[in-house]
Image 1: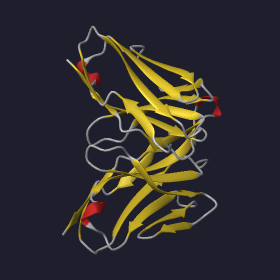
Image 2: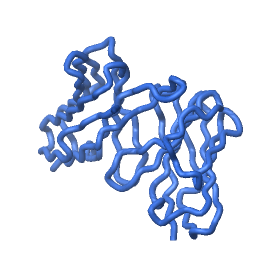
Image 3: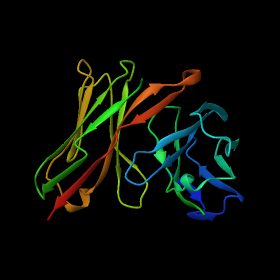
Image 4: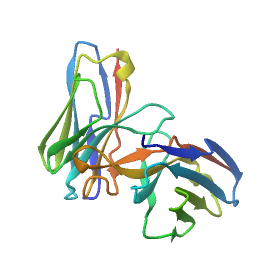
Length: 112
Length: 115
């Protein structure tokens, strides 16, 4: 399996909801990432996990909570989001942190 | 701080012409430079990358050149085709907290190839 998969593809949530985004890879990669991407902008790094440990948090608000249950899975827990958090959320993985990254298809999130 | 500048922001070429996109990075410790192509509604896809011990790398119609002294690198696409139309992002690896590598992306170039 040479792909990164993400679920769900689309998510609409209210500002009081709690939801989770899921990401999976079976390439044996030891680094996984969450990015946020707005239209016509580059991916903006949120979190980096290296060997299942949170290594980088780019000063992301606490309403976003990452979790890495094992080396193949990465979750992003969402709570009390704001409309400006609406974006495409991309997961990526790489053999080691900072090496060539492979992106999942993303979750299109809309906060109402 | 860490920064990658990318030019031009938009580029329109005729099918069959060449396209060149240029990036400049600020961190002299950067040693890995990937390029991503993102078609509308799709994920960014790694198309080519170069490491700092190499000056040029080619893969069929695409090539990347690196000038470490000037801290700039470029993507060259020859014999462009309509399917090359997309947004292209350059990136440079920098070292974040816990000495963990991460990519800093340029702002992107929208390439349009006219048939």
